[in-house]
Image (cartoon, rainbow, N blue to C red; front, top):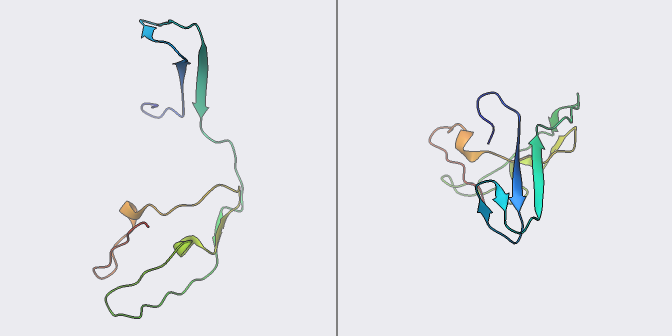
Length: 97
């Protein structure tokens, strides 16, 4: 995991063996390098207006694909809802299904 403001990291994988110090007993290794996405799209995220209605006054269930059904990312990246960051609206709760 990058530390501070780092945007990249790497590690070496030892296949079919054990690691002693920095030596892989099988001699079969692969290095994995990870970095920040360089995909940039000026279109950003676009969503169509959505309306949801509850049949009961206390519960609203929005089935898959959910609140992002009308949304697209200009770069083609997947979109998800981080339920831990959704602000409650008059004691409402958001649960991922």
